[in-house]
Length: 412
Ligand SMILES: [Zn+2]
Image 1 (spheres, rainbow, N blue to C red):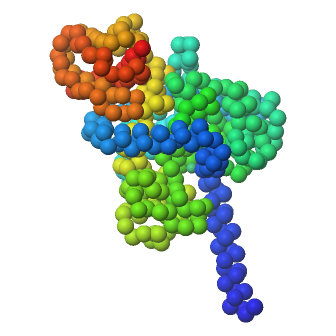
Image 2 (image 1 turned 120 degrees about the vertical axis):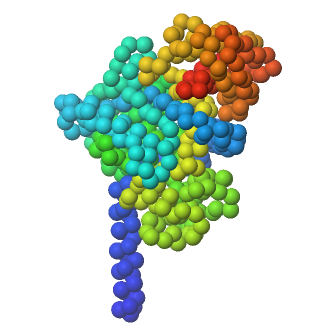
Image 3 (image 1 turned 90 degrees about the vertical axis):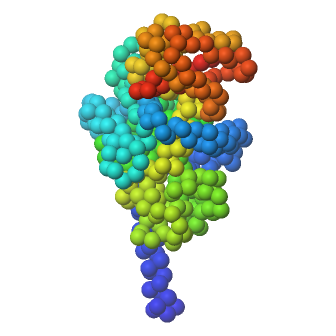
């Protein structure tokens, strides 16, 4: 072997380890779990593919959502699965750190740095628990009762690493996923292999995200990244075959990350030019929260559309009407929200009480995100006819010109 070949080999060797080093610092476990399940779990695969179709349709049908400045409020509950330390020490991170992490998350979603778009989604620590009692939205549980948790942290389901079984650890503390977005703060994931992982929005008892305690901070890029997965965003390099090839991008609505304003790239390509394409705004990918690049500072309009479309579809839609953040719920005559709806559930029609006789815009939305009817009325009692629609869950968006309320309507 010539000296030149040895030199090239050395360079390749060094580059390989440098790339791995970068990747390991920011590694997210979501892809591994998702890809494994797509191959081995036919029910999961069907759910994901159906959700894709719904989201796609919803983005097309719901362009109006982006004009309305409706902030979607998502109640979150944080479960701290510590190793027995005192509060504020080690993995048992303080309330203040958690509150600051949620503030930092909201700053990233509302584009406080001005580099991307305001997603108009806000996360609030739950103020009401599942029994209706007040809460800080933070639960603390010693996780060491689960085998291998103390030494290696949590093992995501399907991952061969040694650690505490994911479902056993989540069973220590979890709240109903229909009303709360669950965040589990853990000591480690696979003995330090990952900093976070999240479930794509297919529901189930263990839906939510897992993040290591050292990444649950005010300046964390991991928290918005994992929430992005939770609202159905893929990595900007999705389809790169594990940093091997440029993702196919023939149709940006169905290829790669299925978002059109984030140019496709390979995971480790974060430099001044994108070797995969000159098309599009490269900064949108290399500075994106859904990349593995070292500097991240934005979500894009395409990602906003996808997350908001996901937010109004099951299983996420119920979060918008949850009472978790102290917003009173949807079962309606008993609540003191401005607009009440009855009967709910209904078998055919329902009425909205508009006691202040405000001019209202009412939009009836199906559970797959289709806009069914739009109605304008200033009546005291507004009747909505559901008789021609199938049984199921509907969302009613009520806008009085200054704010929007959502009601969850069930037709039996
Ligand atoms: Zn990820």
